[in-house]
Image (cartoon, rainbow, N blue to C red; front, top):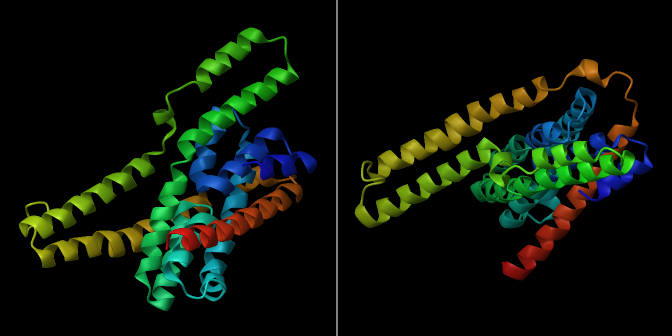
Length: 269
């Protein structure tokens, strides 16, 4: 969030385009971009370029990081899961990379750790959207200091409740996590999950919803939606500089994610 806007200015990118690339690279990919874009009144071209960056470099990370992490992090399940959750941009891409690792190396722990780490990272969006909106308003004020009334209107528009900026999927993931936890606890304490299902039935439901329906069908649909959301026509004439910034931002996120993973696991595991 700090490096990409700075590097974007050095590369001559529009301020709002840099903000969108920063949000998509740092928080949760396309979801962050679509949340920030209307808040800062970004152009369609800026949004399309930011989405293209996330799709391109996030997909490359999704395909490469599972294998790189297996060798670099010495096949440590917790470290690999945390790294994939921190380093891959979009939620669907992060879960996809963890699912690839889980299938190739038969390690379900990586998928669980990556999902928890990515969700925790996504929660930062609730703070990032108002913050980027404020920075955009402040920057526009410096560009045109005479429009005080317009500034007040923009501040009011940017002063929505933080909850208004929380993406619905974050609430959905939290709700499913609570439901799973309540089911497990009730099964252990009462012998019936949610007071309805026996152990083998609960395992079947969890396996179908989490593995077959969620990881296979819904995740595949989400990945297709990310690609279809990229408007190629809006990318004409943008040049190579936005993608240099996106690549540099991806490298910084990967490096930061790896360093954070090593530090946190050394301290707490």
